[in-house]
Amino acid sequence: MTGAPDAFPDWDWQDPARLEATMERFTAGLSAAEKLEQVAAELPRSRAGLAELDVTGIEFAAFTTEHPQGLGTDLVAMRGPEDANGRRIVTEPGRVYRVDGRSLFTQLDITEPLPFEDGSVDWVYAEHLIEHVPLLDAINWLGEVRRILAPGGLLRITTPDLRAYAAGYLAEDEKFFARHRRRLSVMRVGPPMPERRAFMVNQIFYLYGHRWIYDHDELRYALTQAGYDPGRITARKFRDGHRQDVADLDTTFRSDETIYVEAVIA
Image (cartoon, rainbow, N blue to C red):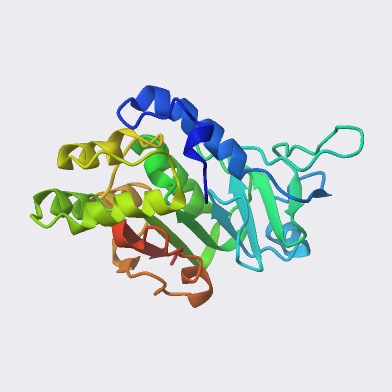
């Protein structure tokens, strides 16, 4: 993920409302594909229908998924290149597309019921998604995920860790916040962040469209409220999990600020 700060002259880390609109434009740039082709005019809803596309699981908040049997999803539409007539394919909800010849994608809104039958997938993965919706919407989505997972199915979820930010605030050496600022600088995500510790705590709550920040206990609360068995909720580490193919979807970009939690369906 890269961006050009000079392309967003109105980028202001200290103005959350204005920055949210800027981030939406930034995200739209990430949704462009070199090649985009429709492969199904109707999104399969059953386990058998998904199997016809060789799909066994869903990765949420992903324009492209690295899992060979995954279906990537996002609320934002993807856009293909313009053809000779100036027309381009833009994804529509309820259809399936192949991105750059390798990864399947469909548009989904996690605040709505998921359009899949009960027990239709074996795994669900979501990296840094749940913090972008209010707690009640998160619990409802988690319940929908539990519904579509087959017995023995796995949910792996990652999100920024409030405990890490609290510890970073209290630490005198400020190494955690320094790494965070340096990472965004290298990725060229906007201009340099302010170095104030209070700002670094506030930004995780109020920037990027975040709506609710979790520690492990808060995430366990949301999962149990959504009906998951507390005895089957497990704290994990980066790329360590019940299924290695799903754990391998973890990216290194923000691993130091992330909690990893899995829940297995009975």
